[in-house]
Image: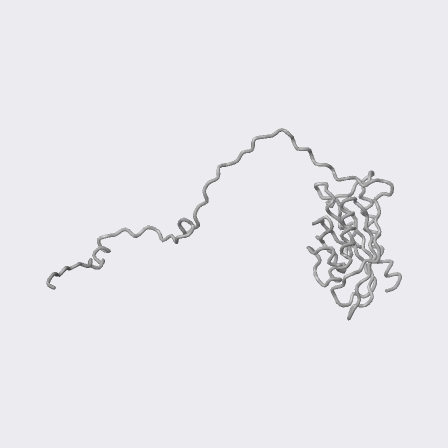
Length: 238
């Protein structure tokens, strides 16, 4: 890959970061997920993705650009972000993801892909930027991953060569999510509706014995067809 091509791809990272920083509030308030307009980063969408926190150290990809799908050979939507990372380095990624969501830090990772048969040298740069949900909690992210080299056989997973973390605005603390309203300490009566006994399963009586319904009403016609009663005859001749 030529330097010009490499610079073009790194420009996608710079475009996404620049757009994100323009959305920052004057006090460094992290942007909302709903503020992201894909049209504003159209040229970088191929390398971009949106993520969501699903555990303190784990995030999953909600929407993925085509480049991520090409790297893994499948649709990355719904997959953990750690799927892109070699198992031995996933703990490092988890620690960085935790700081991104807890402190609102900007995360940069330099990556080198695992090599093997049909998998030549491939390096990459990943950018992770925090976002807030519509509820105000810091549980979303926008990121991008660009690579340098031939993808070759998929899937391609990466080792982490370096990680850097930076506050959105140097010298300013990252604001915490807006606190929710405190609950009223005055106890209030709780309405509990009366419970009705559960109906027996259809086709069953008492939940176990098969229910066959009531016997048919006897008519004169069915009475005439009924076989005669057996008679007991006692003989004392013997």
